[in-house]
Every structure is written in structure tokens, then in C-alpha cells.
Image (cartoon, rainbow, N blue to C red; front, side, top):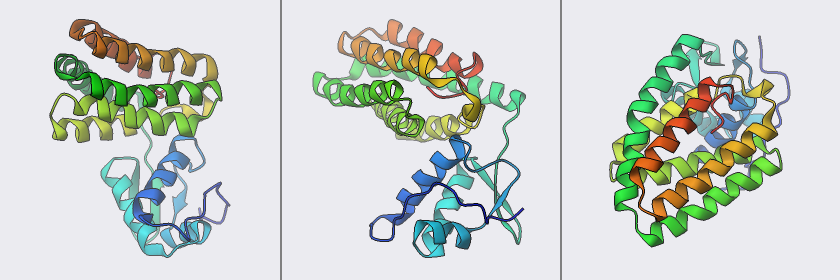
Length: 223
């Protein structure tokens, strides 16, 4: 299939740092179902919609390839990666091995200032959930978990978990009955900040295990 269908993409023709902004917009299009698994998308056609040259779009698409969100279709373009139930189980298992223990370390190390810097991101997640704004929710959620994990002091771990989380977001988001579940999940981010502030590593680790488990209980990765 071709890429003639118009997507709800923003224009970046007068903005800087195009590669990252295009990557963020494409990631949002993938997780909200605008870009469909099985359909072929070309960088030149998407560039027209963004109002930029094909180069930053192609570079952004390759970034998403590295994250496992899309795959290259030789001589044609790119295709959204489909994630099976078995693959999602495997990804979730890896995240559970990495993120909750790292959260416990973060709870032992986080300063009052660091927690105060994290709280506005948790508030942004709650606001996005209340507005049923899935794209803003996912953006704020990605920022929150990256910052929380960064408090554990292992940048490589942050990158690994971030990429794994991006892959889980391909699962069922377009059909998600969102607001009630998003609100419950959003509130957990506020509770995570509370556990960090109180230096409660065991409580934060337990909450993160519950939070990650939402991927398999029907939240579809929107945590």
C-alpha cells in the first residue's frame, strides 16, 4: 500500500531540531494507530506532510527502527512493527527485571530537589489522562520514567528500558477505552513521587511492578 492517505501530522517547516521533533510526531502516530501495521510509509511522502525535506524524516524513521517501532521494507519505505502477545510477554518480563529494582535504587538516592523536579511531570500525566489526551500522556509518561530511572545513576539502563517501553505501546492502544484506566495509571505516578520523597524503596519497587503489569492487564502499555 502507498502513503497517499493524509495523517494528522504537525508542520515543522519553521522549527529547529527537526529530527527529534519528527521522531516524536511519528512515534505518536504509531502508538495512536494513525500509522497502521502492514501499511508502507515513505520518507518523501511523510516529509510533504511535515513541510520539511526528506532527510530529517528518514533519519527519524531510522531512529524508530532502532527502537523496534518500525521496520525497513527494502526499496519501498517503512512499516509499523506488529507486536505479538508472546513478544509483549517477553518485553514485559524484561522490564519487570530492570525497572522496579532500579526504582528502589532511585528511592535511596533521590534528593528533595530531584523529586520536586519530577512532580510536575507526574502532574502533566494526570492532566493528560483527565483530558483523554493519549499523545500528551505518552510523551509525559516517557519523560517521567526516564527521569525516574535516571535517579538510579545508570544511563544505559535508562536507554534500554525506554526503548522496551516504546515497543509495548504498540499493543492495543487504538482500541483502548482510555480515560478510566489512564486516570488510575496516572495517579500511580504521583504515588511514585511520594515514595521517592519518603525514601521508601520497597514501596516504590512494588508499585512499579504493579504499574508495569498494566501492560498485560489491558492498559496496553499506556503507563
